[in-house]
Length: 320
Ligand code: ADP
Ligand code: MG
Image (cartoon, rainbow, N blue to C red; front, side, top):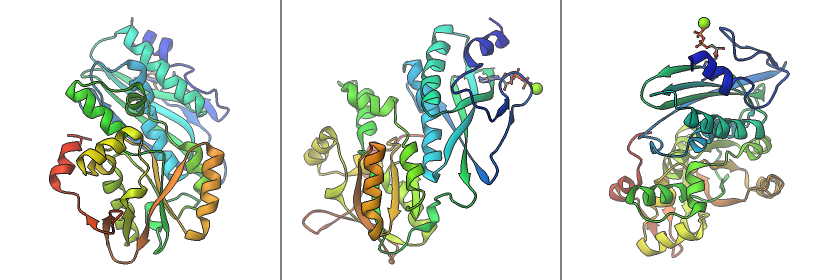
């Protein structure tokens, strides 16, 4: 099958059919219409086999996750997803793999009204790069730099599930389907990010882990934070690991959560909870912003907890 046949078979008409796509896959460029008064939000991510996913990972999961990580970035700015482009590097034209990949990609794209409008297909070590494009009303994006002293810090979903799944897969121990889904089929919190645009002062998506990603908000906003570890939302399995080890690095630093972390004025916390309910996605307040810089973790007994390099390294992903 030629490169062209392959593109025609698997990547034309992928995802939603959007009226703002004047010309999609097939010519030298795509031609796209940005609605008046909107800014284009753009983000790109690469997933490489052996680094970001296991080489034998099911192809639909790779397709899903390659798009999901980009949609999570759009969500973190409060952007409405619209288009994607895809650069695919394949060792060989294995039709079964490409079919599975495009199926996983298409299901998530369709669910979010995203159309694949172009890309590139080359030969080489298996690697997938996806660029996503979304719309935000001019000036309405939620940036990392807006956190204010006394804001409440919230996170969506639960933390550490993907990290625990990854650890199990690496060690060759049993991993429940539920945990594995959290690693391989992350759910980008697109609706939540959009709805929070009105009230969040700062927002980021959690790809590297709360500890590192929240630091980005703190640095950009020139503030500090105090977190109550007991308030971190954990699945039963992650809670069990933390209880056994006393080490919070799993939910704080393992990464790959693709949840949203955001700040809201305390007076808007109820509004944020209502939004979360409407979006069908739980949120939890985990601490607050303070003027003194630095990120502090408190245990239930009031003692401070410090993340050691050792616990951090234990869960850190080698390369991301
Ligand atoms: P060119 O050589 O002009 O860059 P290509 O032969 O690489 O064009 O691609 C032909 C068309 O197919 C273009 O519209 C391109 O955007 C699209 N395309 C190529 N690979 C992919 C892919 N993996 N996914 C989506 N569209 C693709
Ligand atoms: Mg060309």
